[in-house]
Amino acid sequence: MKLTSFTPEFLAENIKPVVQASNLWQGKKLILAIIANPAAGGFTRPKVAAMNQAILSDYRKKAGKMPVCSAVTECCVFKTEYAGHGSKYAEEILNRIKTDPEKNYLLITAGGDGTHLEVQTALAKAAFASDKDAELIRNNMTLLRLPFGTGNDGSDDRTLDKTLERFIRPSHVSLQRAVKVYYEGRISHDKKNQRRIDKYDSLDATPPWYSFNIASIGIDAFVTYMTNKTKRIMPGDSYQLWVDLACVFYGFSFPAKTVKIRTFDKDGNQLAEISSPVEFALLGVSGHRTYGSDHRILPREDCFCTVKKMSLIRKLLRKSEFNDGSHVDDTKYCTMGQASKIIIDYDQDILVQMDGEVHLLRPGCYPLVMEHTEPVIPIIELDSSTIYKGAEPYKR
Image (cartoon, rainbow, N blue to C red; front, side, top):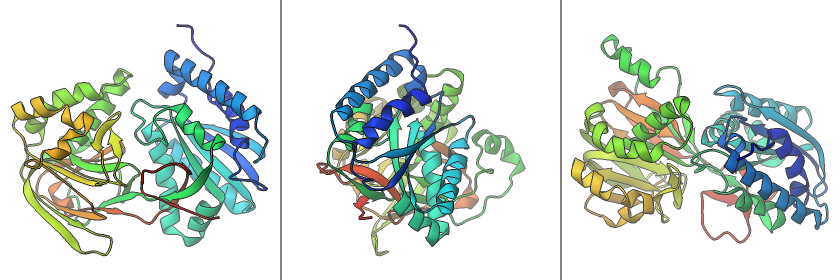
């Protein structure tokens, strides 16, 4: 297939008229800022890029038949070049707002879940560190996450056309909460296990960490780590491959021992306590969430899930259930529920992941805490949406 000329600059030029069809910024100075990863599959994979280009052109035509409601006065493109670059750009944009609080920014992330995570983490850290920054983020910034990666579980919708609907159909701004992840212990420098520590790169990233989709420990974090490692060598979607391989190899790398997990509601009341070897445990920002390229791990309203250790044969036979969401009916092994906070006590190595970012937890780290934050990131939701995704409508 012929290579397309779909670039971050082309995206900026053609999404601008679509944005202007929305009335969310009527009467305001709106600056369009795009933080794009040019290496993301939405730009580089010919078939995907051509499809995105066609969708964008179609929506530009639709918007052209509508009145200009929100005039874009400036358009900026920021292209990421290394891991963490998205966070730097988000901080730069926040600093620009501080110098001129009259301006409003629509911040569009065009990349995979890693790009979305970097930008949102920078904004969340700024908001939780400063009430003034939090107010600027709430009132002068709106985030749109385009599905330009491989998995696209952390984007606003799984396809570009469904994402762009927010500009041409009645929509509103909501504040999205996050899952904050931190530990209350201290990592000790263990020379005996330094090779493993270096491999999983746990010591250079200091918590708190944030997830805007799902945070988890266990086999799925191992799958995520191996998928990320494979993608650096061989681009593409290798997640399902590693799901299959992890069923066999995960237990050798991380033998499951008894873990104690306590769940709590938003008022701090304990809801449940689980004490068992587990395959994984997770807390989502809300229910109705996926990971690993649309694996329906939280198919209903429940935002907490843990699965007890299974035999190899059982894992191989039942792994499809974690794709379609039918695992929720297996009450012998699977525990679902509501929770605003979970506390995990363990004395073994285990991997933790937040939206694709993976770290190794050592025995000295525990207890590990995952908890919902206050709503903080302004996003766009369709008025017609009936599914709660952890965001609260916000009146500016």
